[in-house]
Length: 175
Image (cartoon, helix red, strand yellow):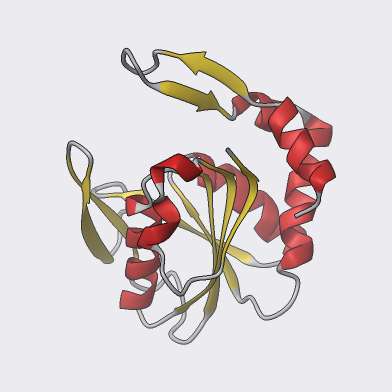
């Protein structure tokens, strides 16, 4: 990742204290999505690192859909949504995982990714790593391979990368 792209991301994040609850510092990425030149620069940056050896792009609900679909378009590849449980209409494979306060389930369509496909996983923020780890697990459960995990913003103090050992994890901006 170039320092220039990192600075674009940093300059287009909005820092919102006490959201969604008191004591939480929220990094809002929607200004980046809303800025055409910034959004295009991030999309091209991710695509440039992944222009070979990727068969499909998968994005995590919800902002990972936005970045993932744009990168898939840039690369001329298909896009597969990784959704919260109960949101996909066909036969799905699910993986449940623990959150800080409870649990959650992610799913993909069984026929959404070909067996043996190399998948680029994209999400907006890497925090504790549970969601990203579950996304990798559900992709592998259908017989595909996670080639890399691309993140726009990594919150390093939450140590989410530790939940992704041995994986190629790339963050544009780490705070």
